[in-house]
Image (cartoon, rainbow, N blue to C red; front, side):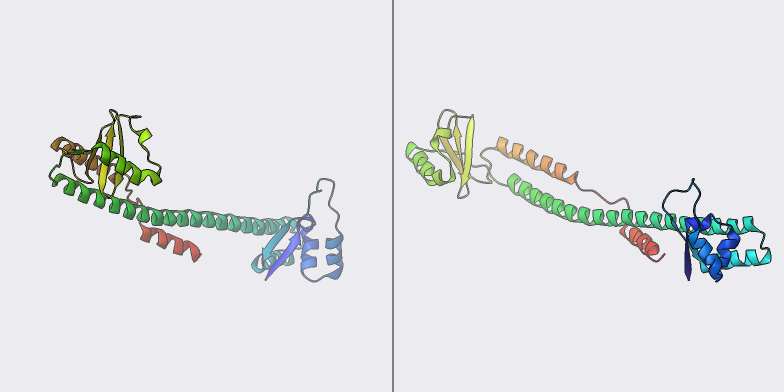
Length: 238
């Protein structure tokens, strides 16, 4: 059982409050009609007292009805206990929010690490394949071949006017890589195949640099998921 009285009642003589709580109708009327002094113009606030606190208050007043200060101390202690309980509950809720955030962060990081690991695996496989592939030199295209490939890729927005605008202009089509130089000549080679030993080494180095870059993005958790769950469960049970 929890009884609630207003802050106005808390300003009355504890004897009056006691009799109001203890069933005296006249005192109840007095408590409800009590007028705060000029220093109290704020809205009445609610102070909840447990049954134990009320019992202690009644006992103190019955033992010594003149012990107003003792009754007031009991009243104040009950209010302070309630405030401390509210603060502890708030701290518990904040801690639960932190733990849930950490658990969500672990879930996200696990999925990110899986994606990164898959990318790294593909890069390593490609690097090995590239390193073990025999270079095949590019083949120069004739004017007729250039016209034919340009006609084929025109629906993709690729046109001959772009050739010569940069040192090299490249695009892929059907597994082949077409490269046009600033001088207007066109060349073709198989995709995924180095055109020279020098290019093979440069490409292999580029693969390794990419592998190192993505490996550095993998993060390992600094906290244990099991520990976080145990803490969350302990706080939830409180």
